[in-house]
Image 1 (cartoon, helix red, strand yellow):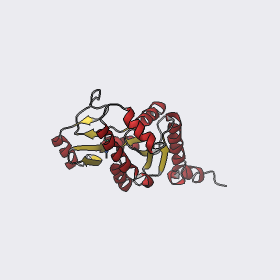
Image 2: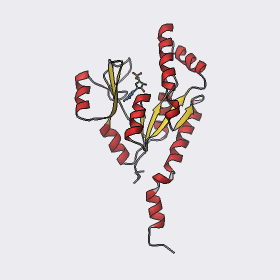
Image 3: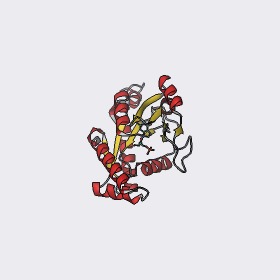
Image 4: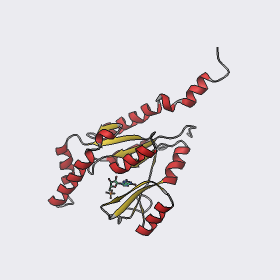
Length: 209
Ligand code: 5GP
């Protein structure tokens, strides 16, 4: 159903291996009105990744042209190699039409969104413990011990930003984590600051005592 209130902008971050993608996919499946923003990137597609589904894969020139045209809500440049960015138009249109939009972006991007969209709700997905996170990184089984150590160090660095988020959801059992994120969304929608239209409708009509 189309709502006449603006959608919520949700930012979901968390270290690699924490399962944020699984949570976001479940949220979208369970809430068809919720939209996932598809980022643009200059990195190469991994096996199985589809242009326009997982990312919009761009050349550096294309990406830089998009930056010049102010087409990103936020973007980042990783280790002077790859760009990642959130296309602005999709997000703004969906929010305007009342859909909640999820951005699955890194901690730096999240901080930029918080500055430019103070209404955004920032959720950090945390592992139950650091040893569990390490086990999940090893569990992928696709990388060398060295690569796992590197990913773990990066994950640890990202987790230092946890206390700047509005909410922290531990992903121990996926279904429980998804329910918690849904509860956050529901509670956020009931906040007084987002209920101006309701207040005006209830108190501002012709049915005053
Ligand atoms: P990957 O290359 O593994 O898909 O993603 C690497 C990192 O980039 C992840 O932490 C992911 O959340 C982040 N990321 C993906 N898209 C964006 C984006 O549009 N903006 C920012 N700031 N980070 C992104």
